[in-house]
Image (cartoon, rainbow, N blue to C red; front, side, top):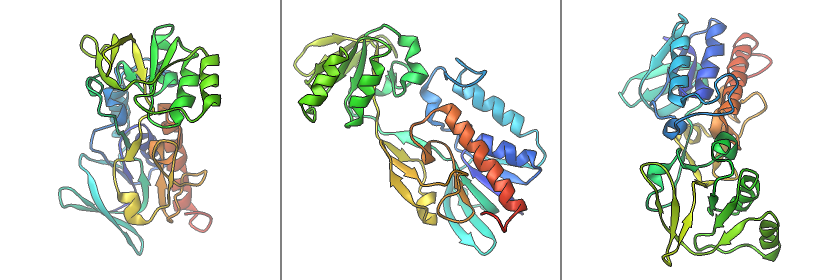
Amino acid sequence: MTHDAIVVGGSFAGLSAALYIARARRKVCVIDTAKPRNRFAAASHGFFGQDGSKPQDMIAQARDQLLKYPTVQWQSSAAVAVAAQQDGFELRMATGETLATRKLVLAFGITDVLPAVTGLNERWGRSVLHCPYCHGFEFADADLGVLYAAEGSIHQALLIAEWGPTTLFLNGHTLPDDTVREKLLSRGIAIEPAPVLRLEGPHTSLTAVVLADGRNVALQALFIAAPTRLNSDLAEQLGCAIDDGPIGPVIRTRADKLTTVPNVYAAGDIARAPHSVAWAASDGVMAGTAVHRALVFPETGQ
């Protein structure tokens, strides 16, 4: 069977795209590995009507609702290869099975590449965070920190100071110039040049950053704009243009989420920066409706 669309990725962007395709009564298959980026977070914030909900619960509910549509199929596997065909695409699964589709929506997400700091990984999504809009309110007026990862960390520190007293941990890096230093100090941001040795605190909580010189800095939340990588190379296999984003690669798309390859769309964190669950869902809706319009009006779009 040839699907009208295959969506690679079953999180906020992919589920939103598939839902709109399904509501248009088109045959859609979702391929998902069940490893969403926000699986480490206890709660998701800032999403309309779902503020404070568990991300995994939100995804599970959306999946259950999607699977009620009769034209939807689900594949709990990974797509490892893709090839363009005369009338669409053929995807090869990790199981060896092949699937055919007329249109393709990439929504496989990204992975945060975390620095090698002892105690950081187990606190990721709980007290080590990436987005102040998603998690800053819960730590308002606490001792906050930013771990330097790139020049964008300076912007992050200037922003996070809105939520509480902030320390920028340079972790052995140097500031670009005195102008940047003055800007940070004008916002009341402390600058700590020493390398970070480890994070301390009970379970997933954070109480202190231990520096290489032995000093402890009290802290309740540490933010980091970690570099990211794409979770799949399908876009590269297809020849989609990929740009250098502020923290990692971004698949280039038009406003309707069509990539540079005809009939291939991309949505969610892989196709935009910055990121949020609301933007991911919105991009998925745009991709899903664009796919349907292209199926109905092939002469006006791809």
